[in-house]
Amino acid sequence: QVQLVESGGGSVQAGGSLRLSCAVFGYTYSRYYMGWFRQAPGKEREGVATVSNDGDTWYLGSVRGRFTISQDNAKNTLYLQIYSLKPEDTAMYYCAADPRRFTSYNNYDPKRYNYWGQGTQVTVSS
Image 1 (cartoon, one colour):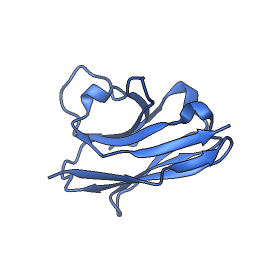
Image 2 (cartoon, rainbow, N blue to C red; image 1 turned 30 degrees about the vertical axis):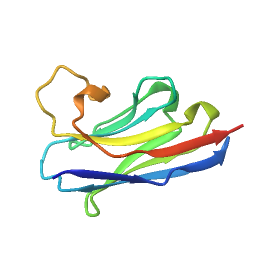
Image 3 (tube, one colour; image 1 turned 90 degrees about the horizontal axis):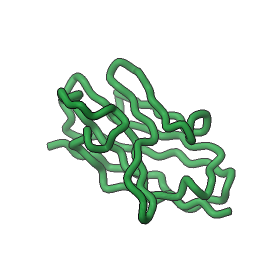
Image 4 (cartoon, helix red, strand yellow; image 1 turned 120 degrees about the vertical axis):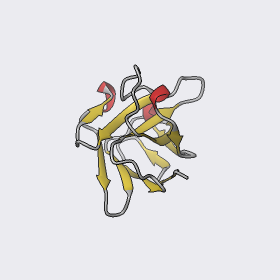
């Protein structure tokens, strides 16, 4: 059974930094997309950053240069390093995994992903 457990969220002032972690349990597929998504109140869930087993990364335009996705395969952990936080980054952040199933959904589309964590809240005050 695949389990994803996020941690590292918190309340910070604008300009601050956070590192989110996602511990992955029970994922045995050799191919994957792993991603970070966020959902603000009243808004749809959106992709923030993804990484594939090939090492290819994708970033949402508004976070490129401030967010960095990385993975430690030895620790089965996915990270999202966030710098220069802005109030508009406030959201619940989720990690997700997909074994690169054959689907028409892009790697940044939440609908592609079938394994999700419970989320970690990031709140940025101005």
